[in-house]
Figure 1: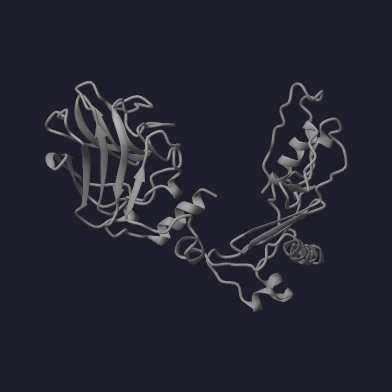
Figure 2 (figure 1 turned 45 degrees about the vertical axis):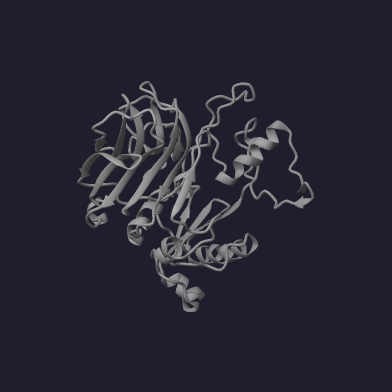
Length: 366
């Protein structure tokens, strides 16, 4: 399926309102920008050879909307679902998600029998009419061209696996798995895939502080945004924890007592009290307890928590809540005004994994 695109450059385009029908792909944006600003792509950077940029500048269309098309061939592939554009035609080879590829699936007869589709984009821009039966030779020609392009651009080998490939297969990580994460104030917002995962498991957050007084306030640790997350913070001289359940409900637990001036640790303990039900969009229920040093000063129950992911708007931040706040209880960034040395997250409780739900989440973001 093709998407419309608007090019807006008042200082660089004399044309206005023209419609260009040349094929353009996402990989063409970088070459176009480099082209119009007059920068040549280096063959090497600091002694390291660079891979070639595989797109085509479409700056040639800016002054000549009717110019001959220059990006004439483009392959597509995701989880063995394949397609190719070539000279105004697009061939599509649908593939069931999660079905492994076998040698028998790659024969010419198997490709034709498995539902190869063909569209003439010069006459059918929206790809509403499959003409593979009327142009079977053209369909097979494009299917064979796909293999040539796939070999050229390192697409092979094909991998049709779904859940196993994305959610269940181990991947290299920058650091090994651990039970203890330490965060420091002043650091950048940490993306979800690099931050500690506390969902559906018992855990604790301990903030090492100093120099507290009645006016000290601010966020100790926050993770997420208004569509889901959690935050541990000080306000009105008391410790508070809020779990934002997917933007539907904020569950707040507050300390019953004011913070003493000589406190050195502010801690939240999250005890999972049941099992998650991701099919119904529910994470574990929990009991949250708040502590000043070793003295418990607050407790509350959270009936339902985030089941799968915290969100993509904002990651984890220490000493402030940036990009978008987890709760409306304070305004961004609500930086901590006292001395916060570090925040320690302990996740020694066993995590819960739901691979099918995680796969659905990943595919929804593609």
